[in-house]
Amino acid sequence: MITEITTILSELSTVLAIPVLRKEQSVKKLVYPYMAWKVLSQGGLDYSVYRMSDNVDPTLVNRTWEKVQNAVMSLSFYDLESNTSNGTRKPILELFEYANKALDWFGVSGRSFVGTHSVVIEVINQSLSDRTAYIDPAYEYQVGFDFNLKKKRLVVETLPVLDVDATVSVS
Image (cartoon, rainbow, N blue to C red; front, side, top):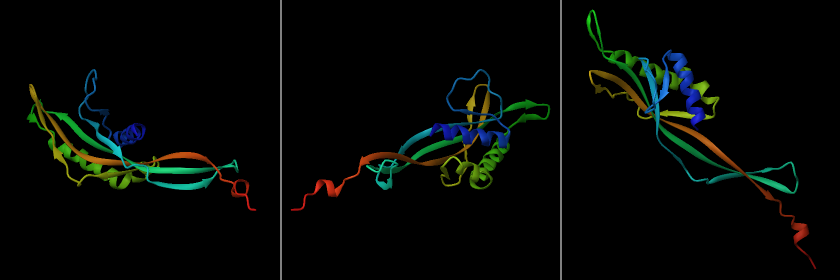
């Protein structure tokens, strides 16, 4: 599932024209603004649905089990407070705009791209949150939201076909 996450967020990074990285990683030098993601939890339902299908070998049959895997993700946008000739720059409004554009991309313009990776993205309650933190000597402004990324996981089990004529003797 990590492959799908990194591919989708790399595309979003290109669309928004800002770098993306995984949260809580060591990097040499951060370039602001940027966005960062984290998997908060990953799980899924038990394998409970299956379907039978033919195998190329007529003595075998395939049973395909499926379950929905789910990853709860956090996505945040970051920028630093900075001093300019006009005073202190506080980029919170710009970060809300990046986050809104990301929501728009997930919901509309990026939906087909996301679908090509066989996943579904559901934004959790469509709300953005201010996650700003004070990092001495300035504020690191953060705006973000959480979402679910869902993917169907399949496991194919190959079973022998029961030959009723060969196993039942009629007298």
